[in-house]
Image (cartoon, rainbow, N blue to C red; front, top):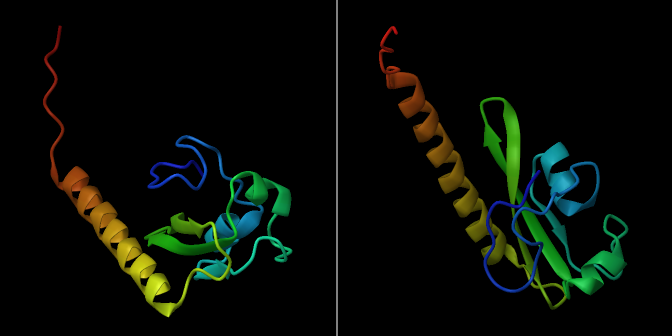
Length: 121
């Protein structure tokens, strides 16, 4: 996966490669359900040194699902531990639904738009 968008100062840089075989985002991609890390200093699914460098202590990830299964994640991070309660997770899920709807809409538009006729040379 590639980081395509970001907001704020905490998190991977745009264009950063995210390993789907490890970490919270990878776990969320492989096992498409909500994943939360309340403290990067004590969660064995993450590498504390990496998150310490980014000043991240908690992470929440929601899968993005399409017709072929998971196609990405929406992930939020915070500099304090245990930053994500039910309300924040629900907001991430709502954002995920918006992203999934946008993908469905884009896919329908691509399918229903005929390709322009080519001019023979």
